[in-house]
Length: 216
Image 1: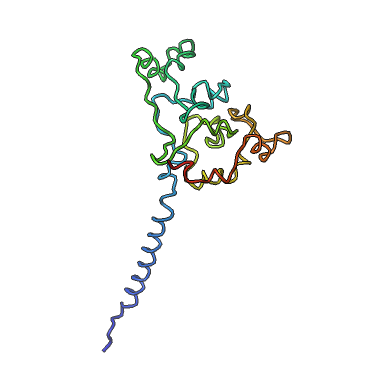
Image 2: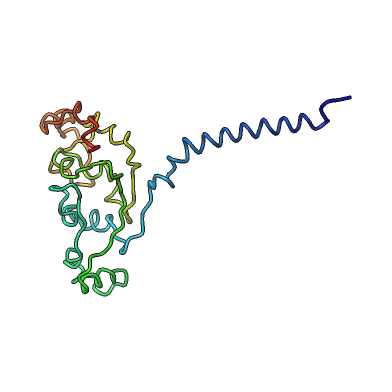
């Protein structure tokens, strides 16, 4: 008398396949899902009170980053423009555009617009815009194609490994100080080398990777 029925092999093969599928699914959930764009919010453009276009204002009209981000050279945060800054132009142009009604209302009521964060760091991470600007790190090193974006989106994962790649080898990411805010800047044969700029800016990679630089 047979111990196992005629379907025993089928059930065993099904069980083995199920175990393999569950194992691969566990690996997927542990290693792949956390780095998917949906979770890192990379390439994600949050909804804003006004659909501000860097492509139009920066690349098209030539506005300097500092016109809106007024504390980027002096403070930890780049800063967001007060409504008065927007109205410097929009009290003269596009004065009745429906898309700018929140700006006009903000100005009339003297209540600041509530912009939504695009880049958000954990509370245990310290980042200072001003020191990066002072050391020749251009805006596009972190914000990549910001000058071409119709809507501001997150362009990097902000993983610690991404930061460390630059901290350990900053030379390729440096540029002359007068080009820091130029979104179209490209390195040419006449540009000082990254090594020369490191010397000029007194950058020492061996100290940049110290944990206390970012974790305070």
